Amino acid sequence: MSLCEPIIRLAAKGDGVTASGRHVAGAVPGDMVDAEGAVTPGAHHAVPPCRHFASCGGCQLQHADDTALAGFVEGRVVFAARGQGLEPAELLPVHLSPPHSRRRAGLHGLRTARGAVLGYREGGAHRIVDLAECPVLHPQLAALIGPLRAFVAAWGPKAMVGIDLTRADQGVEANLVHFPLEGLGPTEAALDFARDLGLARLTIDQGYGPETLWEPEPVTVTLAGFPVGLPPGAFLQATHDAESRMAADAVALLAGAGLVADLFAGLGTFAFALRDGRKVLAVEAERAAHLACKAAGARAGGQVLALHRDLFRSPLQPEELNRFDAVLLDPPRAGARAQVAEIAGSTVPRVVYVSCNPSSWARDAAVLAQAGFRLAKLRPVGQFRWSTHVELISLFER
Image (cartoon, rainbow, N blue to C red; front, side):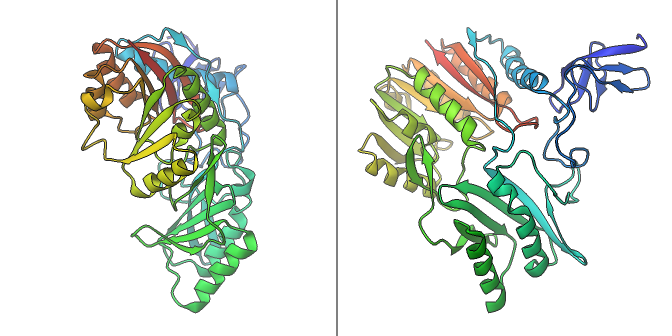
């Protein structure tokens, strides 16, 4: 081995890798590493924008510039596809969400003898990094860090609590997890907190799901220009920016399809984007999300029809799928093994598959390929900026 080696790629967990296979933490492509592991920064080595980067577990790649970051996102997706013998006919440009765009966050808080700490956990540890800033969060969420820390210090239990934040049309929804409010004083303090900060909704989750404490008006989230009721704790894409990119892709990839099945539809993120000029069946198992989508679909003129069904236990069968011109699916991280098997056995000619896990997507993609589908288009998506979490949208045709 030579005295110095160049870093040629980033591994799945964010380490730099040399041609000889050495893994070097904190290095990016273009850096040089010597025999002792010392790194000489190259052209794509960036100064991390956050003071917490060395300890916070929320980001792993703030030392990579956008070129290196896009290369990492693309590499993860393309490597997963090639691992199953798949090569996209067209690889679309990587989409990276910008800083200060995250509209969802899961923080932790802990009351201490001196007040409280609030933030993300350290990488590989349970200790909380007490945030002074967070360059991934939307400013509306970041502005709540200080007030939430003060609230935990005043009213938090002597145990770690969770604080889930979501940016909705009316403002920010805050959900306090394992945060008992016993008695009139703590409850009134929570109501004052929500009112003074203009929260859209404040909920408490003691292990049985979020219970609403404050909601001055019904909370909605706008999907493709249409307001949809937002149930407490409902899933949303992490950034509006990436949601818009993937929704626009879905519309383009499904051009000409008059009847579409949107599987694992959630609130209807893609269904409402696709509703113009076609009918969409939005299938979802989570009841609150299904009901929100159903109600919004009725207000949208009947172009979006909602079906409550668990696609893991009861996937749509080929005879049901055969009536559709195309299928879109956006399953959880585990993928959609059972449903993809039924799609493979159907006559559906076009499938758009959105995924937050390249590994499970590649496994399912191989099943589609065996059934005669070709991977026509593939776009890697870096929605979780500076993290190793990678997403994608893809088109399969036969």
